[in-house]
Image (cartoon, rainbow, N blue to C red; front, top):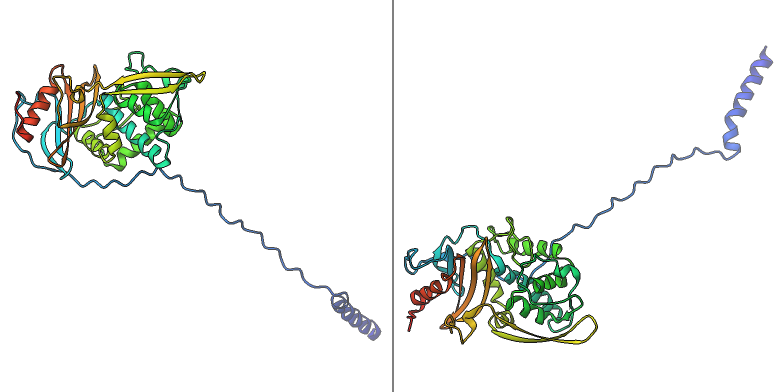
Length: 326
């Protein structure tokens, strides 16, 4: 009996010593690897030149009635001092028509001038460029025409071509849809709370609208660039470019705004640049940039009927600058 006990104890000791004899060691449990989180880049909106613009204050020079200010909505602003001098329904929602093209030209100019591309032949007319309403005003561009950015600016601001406006949009953003997003982003940056764009040319759409005040702010930014003012103040321009076969083409474009035409009865030596617009829904719309005594002004007229815009311009000249009709 004693032998069995002793044998059992020896057997237990041997079993206990086996791990040490064979070099056994307990495995450390493997911890599951944790992958670092993937950081997705945040999509940023477009960036624009920083053009400071203070809040404008209202300081009406003279109370005028509807018999003097014939248009449906208007505002006249001293851009130098940031003062609204005359106003009628300046915050009312209106259709801008082709005054929209001031924003289109502004965005195209800023991109081209920053990249040094103003005079490079980078504007190509595509079938999509000519996807415009049948009754659009056009600069008579054809598929395959290749223009410089500057030439397309003249075609947009003088002839008010919807085809030309689309060509600038595609130059900037690739598609007109992407460009409209850029237009609205710029409007937001400028604080244009009464403005929304649906196209690059201004053809009427229920969701394409602005106010006279907002359009005056667009004019303010537009006027920070002397080259844009020069273009929009030119009456006639000769463009030479190439067609789809590389052959030379020549076009003369004339400004639809007669305030810069010295041969017109509506000519004004105060007006340095202008942009016209018209659709059935908008009525006649117009933006005038003016200069007097070293100061810059903007006159925006909206919802005008035939024969109302220029009498309104003359009334403003009389009130603000003491001009009288000869």
